[in-house]
Length: 582
Image 1 (tube, one colour):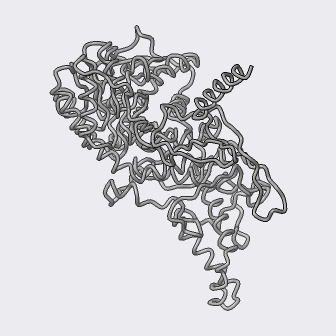
Image 2: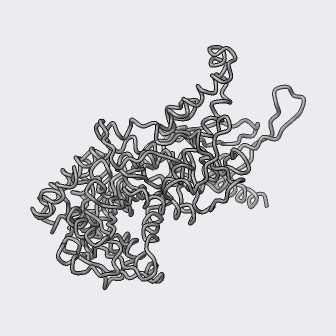
């Protein structure tokens, strides 16, 4: 693209990966060159070079070459689709980006979440990644592709998110999807008819539904195994096994699987290992560094942290596997939209702080539950919540216990009363939010698993500890347990609903009384009725503007309920007077 470079046929390059890398580099640099030439500050170059166009071209070439490094001399390669055949499906479906698989970040985890420039090539150098809210991108020409063409295939805001996630996970590449289930579905799409997937028996209900009601219909054999037992896992492997999918800790029983041990077994047979690490965000655990091939997150949880957007992430450590995931993301149209990518980029910046605070509070909540006589068993990847062996395995592969806790009470009715009596803990599915949440998995998050196939007790309660003060959370659980045990009566308004019906209102409600001379007097009311909804209104007199040139009808609506009683008295008096006159 610079000064008529030599045309090199794709057949002269060695390997499909090299061809695709070359296309990415050439297209990226061509757009960079176009942008540089269009910038208004080029006058400074021209003044220094004194109208020497050849030297100006050298400056541009050097800037572009420095931007991509020495991997390829882009001036010697040009992929012009108008002059040589090209398989469209072989074109890269995502723009060039760094491979973070072997990256050693010198920053501490808290800084890694914040110190990241999502758009270093933006000429305006924004401090935050912009939302590229566009569906299409203009191409260099009718026979060439730029780094982006259609937001389903790639978008700068999504690229920024995927690069940041890849850096945090030390992945070759990361991909953002519209939901956690879309991410899990894409991983399963790596399999084909006749392949087998082994999954841990204690698994998220949505994933169980995907495996048993979708994958099986595609001819994929699904087998559930206790992955905490490596001997049982090894015996379950068959020549058809292509993938082992697991959670550690599992959701919601918090069972710990030795990820290094699973990878050692699987890779001996050429089997991929996929881990749903939603409960353990990368500030706590990085499964790819343990040998895992694929890491999946429901970004809705800790990456967002505010329960205001849904999304999923797939991170891989093998570049070839990244090509396949990128193809599926583009072909099936499951990518995350730009605005949600922006929200996740914002959420990542506070992820370390949120997770750290939530873990501290979770530890105190666990200690409270362990001491309470009404709690039968606490399940948690920390002291008192699991056996010593499981705890040792978890500590060897994670930097914290997380903030999700499960416990049983021994009674389904007791558990239901406890959940319903909580005021701060919100009864809802999901976890990882700044707000503390709780649920009963058997009737909520895991209800899609048939009762006869569930491996969790019916009275199980799952807590997600947020960033509220731990003392407030403990007091909330304490009063809820007392209500469930019949030791305390429940309040009529069981929750902090922020309606504050016992407080006076601002501005105060106005009662208007219409007098004979047409002048109304107002009396204020300092209290609010139980419901502030009014369906009866009266229309006031017409008013004119200050100039008097034209009159406008101004409809003044005021609550009519305060007038009902005096009107009724007036009507009764009027009827009595009529009778006397007769």
